Image (cartoon, rainbow, N blue to C red; front, side):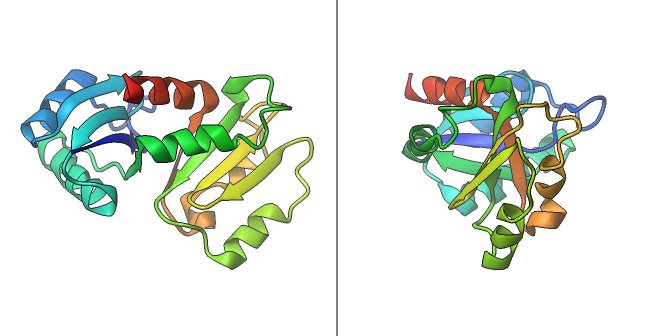
Length: 178
C-alpha cells in the first residue's frame, strides 16, 4: 500500500461544487483507502491505497460523483513525486511570497507544441517553468490579473490541471510524511 497525495480540482470554489471534508474522508475510507486525511477545504487529500496513478484518479472520480454529486477532476501524486516537486523548486531564489507561487499539477505531460507556446510569451516579471507533469508559476504582482494564469487553463493546456500555492504544497508534503 502506497501513500498518495490526491488533488481535487474545482471543489468548494465559491458556492459551486461544495464538498465537506468529513464526508469526503468517510467516503474514501469506505472505498477501502486508509489513513485518509484532508488539508484545508479545497480538495487536498492524503491517503494510503493499493491503487495508484490513473487507476486511482478514475476510481476516486467515480466514487465522488456517485456519492457526493460533484464531478471534480482528480490528480494523484505519490509522496516521492510531491517531494521531487518541492526539491526541484526552480523559483525558490525569487519567489518570496509563497501564496503567489503556484504549481499546476497536470493529468499528463504537455504536448511539445503546447509547452513551447506556454514558455514563449513574455510575461515578465512573472516566470514559468515546465517539468514533466508540473508547471511552476511565479506571479509576483498577484494572480488575479496575471497574464500567465490565462495560459494555464485546461483548454489552453489540453490536459486537466489543478493548481496549489507553495504553502499548500509544502503542508501537503508534511502531512503525507507524518
